[in-house]
Image 1 (cartoon, rainbow, N blue to C red):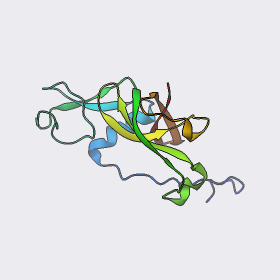
Image 2 (tube, rainbow, N blue to C red):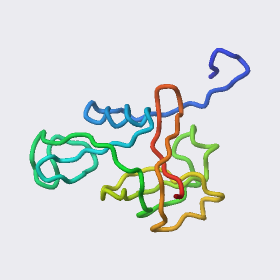
Image 3 (tube, one colour):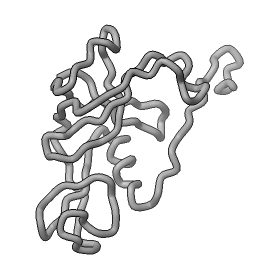
Length: 144
């Protein structure tokens, strides 16, 4: 696959199907902002976006709020065998669950390590936005 210039190859980019409820998250990521749902009645953040708050069960009573982007590494695995051909040149990479300072946990990648084995549980992280195309940005994390 090329981008119009026959000499420049484009790596295929598998993308998740994005439900309408989570589209604001991806729109904000494209603007390099990290937003998370926050329930108005109980004032707690939660992840993933859904109709009712999982803490107090209030329906349709939450709003998106920008968060700090600061986190700690909760758990991880180092991927050596890609699950999709598009990721072949990325291995090894760190697949992780990070806990934001606001309390919610997200699945993501830890990047900007000299070697993936440098990753440690509880290490401090900071959000890093990966613009994979003009209209698609991934939320990743790097050592703080």
